[in-house]
Every structure is written in structure tokens, then in C-alpha cells.
Length: 263
Image 1 (cartoon, helix red, strand yellow):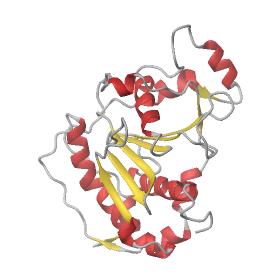
Image 2 (cartoon, rainbow, N blue to C red):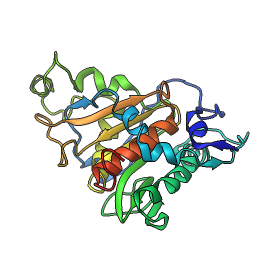
Image 3 (cartoon, one colour):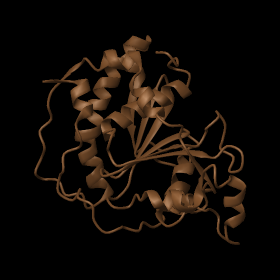
């Protein structure tokens, strides 16, 4: 047995196919993605946003839960998104969900009000995983192929900084191009923006890396000029993927008004 704290501090096991490799280009998955709107700009989350969420007093209490140590299968080969989803269900989501089930009663929310819903279609979108509490989707988790998430695709031309304003970025976008995001980020952001109609907080995971996107940064739909989509990229260090996922859940709960800022 191990505590929740010990569980989420551990990196995901290095299963077959998880080692870094050649960049993999993805293609559109359907018409609903092709007509979705990509953000033109992004802005980094404030420093330590998720470290602060991880230090939630209620979560810290919930992390005392005792969890079984999950063995690593030799059968994995992360060749497809389906392979990643199967591995992540065992090594990423399982323990996080058990911790959430220990957290919710501390927030006076019944455990049966929590659902981790897979491939649920709403309108034109069907995200891989929805974390639903009190009938509100607080977080969407979407899987991508290994070697398909590259920080530079997002930050090189589209990231707002003190030295580069949103207006400067938008003005630099060539005619006929929708976004300053490049390569996979352009397409993935369109898919994520489609999902944001169900929940503004979207986590992307390809087992190697994770990206967190907040499409409702001030409680309303993003504005490329005045309120860009918030962005965070992680390789699993210094925060592990499990730490980051549970911290993102806390962030989503607070955004949804289901958890106080001091809880």
C-alpha cells in the first residue's frame, strides 16, 4: 500500500512506446473539428497556479488515503491514442479518481455525485474523458498520440509576453491563416475549443507530456485580444502528471464554484 501523496509523486511507468521519438503530425478527425475556431493567441497561466492548487488543505487531507500499488503490464505499446487511453486509465486516472472520491466528502459533496465519463457525446463533440461533479463538467481530458505535443508549436508565435502583445501577434498572422499557433497546435487547439462548449478547462495528454488550456480565463469565452486562452505545458517534471491532473481538477472545481479558494 501507499498513500495518495506517494502515488501522485511517482512518474508514469516507462512502458513500451513511451520514449521520446520523432515528431508526429496529426490530421483533422472530422468536419466538426475543421469548422471549429482556434484561438489566435495564448497566455501562460500565472506562476505556481497548479502548485497552489496541489496544496489545497482539503486535498492534502484526502491524500492520506491508502492506495494499492498498481503493477506495470508488459503488454503495452503506445502506438495509437487508444493504447495511450488504456495505459493512462491504469497509471494516471485510476489513483487520481480514488483521491477525488476521498476529497469530495470533505467538500460536503457525495461521492455518487462524481462521474468519470468516457466518450460521451454532447452536440458535435465527444471528448475522451469528462470529470463531472454535481452534474457539472469541471475538467475534460483528451488523449493525443505520443510525440504529437510540442511546446514550441504553441509558444513560438502565439504566446503573449511582456515583450509581445496580443495585438502584435494578431497583426502578424498571415492573410488566410486563422491562428498564430503552428503545426499540431493549430489543429489540436481547434478540437479543444470545440470541447470548451462543454467545459472551458481542457487537459491534453499523450503520456509523455501534458498541456492545460483554459478557454474561459475570466469566467467567459476567451478573447484573443483582451483575455487569451491560458496555457501550461509540462513534461512531468517538476510536477508529475498525476500531481498536475489532480491540481487541474482542483482548479476546475474552484472555477465551477464547487470548491472554495481556501478549501
